[in-house]
Structure formats: structure tokens, C-alpha cells
Image 1 (tube, rainbow, N blue to C red):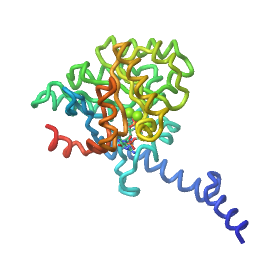
Image 2: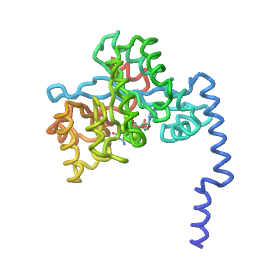
Image 3: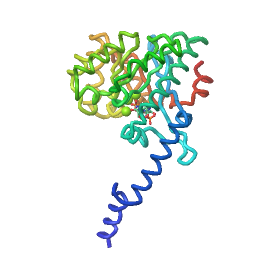
Length: 279
Ligand code: C2E
Ligand code: MG
Ligand code: MG
Ligand code: MG
């Protein structure tokens, strides 16, 4: 009966069931192997970031988004492997690979027609709290000769939760090298306006949850408007994530939002496709 079905379904999703554990172990082994194989299977995609120039959205660079192109699993999206990679500490190697690839790409764009393009790279808290993170960043800057101003590191609020003071020091050190810092997914998680007051930031990225609700939910609209005004008065850039409809573009056009990203403009593209379209 229904009761039995419910029970079976529960067992199927039970994270401790033998099948689930075996599958997880198999994927972990594949991930370890991919990391040992110089991270070649971890492919960096680029989603254009648009800047409103006299109201006209114009590409000003891209966010680097990793995909695991696995022979066994196909193209695996970050939500399906990043947290596992963090638990296994494999994220340090994967993240460094993404950072280097993204910096290389951006330097290439800068040298070939777009000196103004910037690249954003997502950082895991695991990566950022490595004792030698700043040395690893230095290596990338040196090896690629990218203008540090064109490299933005995206961090999330959860990062600051544990040790605010340490985080501020680290972000200050990153900015002292000339790189920029963006606060990703703002408004979700443990958000507090105190973060934007105390954290050294160049950009606030407003989570797509607010943007997708903007046209139907009054709170979301007011949230985006208010945060963008606050950011503007603090001289911090604002990027709205997840723009999918022209109605949203119209609305943010009335706010102090200067950057936008979303499927309305373009999806994350392979390096090759990004360069075909935007270089
Ligand atoms: P994020 O940094 O907030 O990146 C934006 C995510 O939203 C991307 O998902 C992107 O494909 C998606 N997106 C962009 N525009 C739209 C839109 O209009 N509508 C909708 N529904 N989605 C949109 P993706 O690539 O699957 O990445 C998910 C998350 O995984 C990222 O969120 C980021 O937190 C993490 N991630 C991605 N690459 C890396 C990486 O190299 N290192 C680390 N540590 N995390 C990464
Ligand atoms: Mg991001
Ligand atoms: Mg985000
Ligand atoms: Mg996110």
C-alpha cells in the first residue's frame, strides 16, 4: 500500500543505504583520479557579466564556473560535486586549477582586444582558509601576468561567520595585491547588513532568488532597490544574478545596479564559445 511505497522511497534516498554509499565512494574515487590527472577533466565555463553603459548592457567580462567533464558521469554541475570535493579537500586542487585557467583566459582577452574584461572566480571557504592561500594567489598572478585589478574573487557570507577578524585580514591582503573581492549570493544564508559594513568589498552580488521574485514579490523588489542604494552610497558595485526576463532588466534599470548576469543575456559558455561571441 501507500505506506509501503513511502517506506521504500525513504530507503532509496537514505544517505546511509549500501547502494548510496557505494555510489558515493565510486564517485569519490573518480574525482580523486581526475584531480591526480592534473584536473584536466575540470572544465571552466564562462558566463558573461554585463555592465550597464548608458543603460545598455555591455559585456565586461565573465564569471568562471567549473564543470566536471567526466567520462563516466558526463558533464557534472558544481552543485553535484563541490561539497564532496570540499569534504575530501580535493577542492584545493580543483579551485587552484580554476583560478589559474580563469586568470589565463582573462589575460588572453585583455591582450587580444578587450583590456577592460575582468574575470570572477568562486572560492570555497576550504580553499580560502588554507595557510598558503595568498602564496597560491601570488603564483597565479605571477604565472599569468594578469592585471590583478581584472581578477575578482567571489566569497560567500558563510565564510565570514566563523572568524570575522581573520576573514577581514585575508580579504584586505587579497585587495592589497590589487585583486577585487565580491560577496556572492547576498541575501541568502546568514546575511546581515553588518557584513557589508565590515567586510572589505568591491562588489555585492544579489542572489537570484530575489531577482526571480522581483516582479511578483514586493519585498524582493524593495530588497534589490535598497541594497543597490546602500551599495552605491558605500561606493561598492552591485551585480544582480539570475536575470532571465526583460521585465527584470527594465526594473533594475531604475535602480542603482551597474552589473547583471543571467540567462537573459547568456548562459555559462565553454571558453571557445565565449571567445567566439565576445572576443
Ligand atoms: P554562483 O557563484 O552563484 O554562480 C551562479 C550560478 O547560477 C551558476 O550555476 C549559473 O549557471 C547559474 N545561473 C546564471 N544565470 C542564471 C539564470 O538566469 N537563472 C538560473 N536559474 N541560474 C542562473 P552553476 O554553474 O551550476 O554553479 C553553481 C554554484 O557552484 C555557483 O553559484 C558557485 O557557488 C559554485 N561554483 C561554481 N564554480 C565554482 C568553482 O570553481 N569553485 C567553487 N568553490 N564553487 C563554484
Ligand atoms: Mg559566484
Ligand atoms: Mg551567486
Ligand atoms: Mg551560489
